[in-house]
Image (cartoon, rainbow, N blue to C red; front, side, top):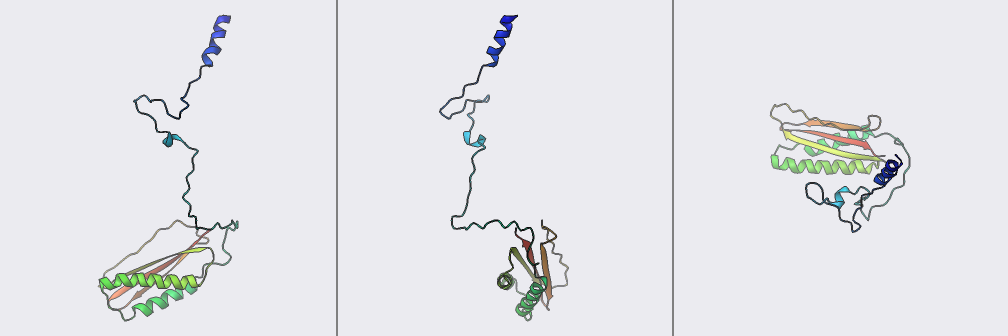
Length: 169
């Protein structure tokens, strides 16, 4: 019996030898395993060298809420000023949506709302008595994130503009 006990530790002490040159042994299918696809410890970062690091403030909420009334006024004013006497033209409406987005974006940026990202959507279409439904879905915090929307109609076109304010921690 003592001979059997001596043999068991010898079998357990067997170790698998891996090559030291970095190559891997062939798998059962005969392919060589790619060492880059199995290595987990590598971290690749694609950082912008010109970006500045902003230190953490550990602030969980905004100092002041998103100014809904001011942005609502900006939307009404810009849309009515730009589209009051405009006739619908499909080629011109594309340019007009880009112009309205840029004008609204610049007016909202002038407010310098701290720690909020803004997204502006403008839709312009022909008014022919048809119905249209515009919807959007967002993943956000209902305590701090919000939106402002405004619709406009004249004789030949309609416009719907939305400004989303997303709190950036």
